[in-house]
Image (tube, rainbow, N blue to C red; front, side):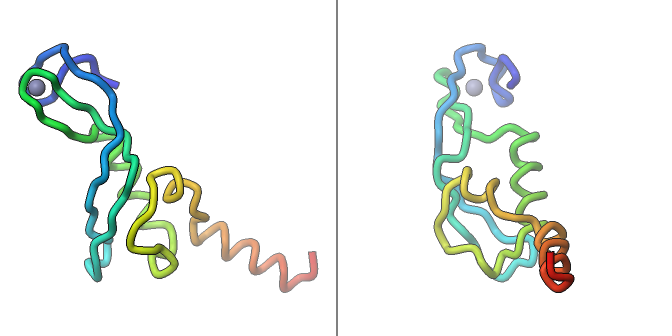
Length: 98
Ligand SMILES: [Zn+2]
């Protein structure tokens, strides 16, 4: 994680978990992601998620079957969701009787 606030450059930042609202990649609905690793700046009071984490969430939402996602879930739950390519692979294996 970066050592200074992305907004004001202050070094007085700390990690925290925050609930964030996210629009699904297909734009059909918004979901609530709880306990998302975030950074709080004690100087400017900004609370934000790092770019790398935002990309991670967006990649994951793109790869999992969002129809199976409830409206509210935690960041850990989202990251534990099976990605569709993997699930298809296992479905295929099942057909072959493994
Ligand atoms: Zn700041």
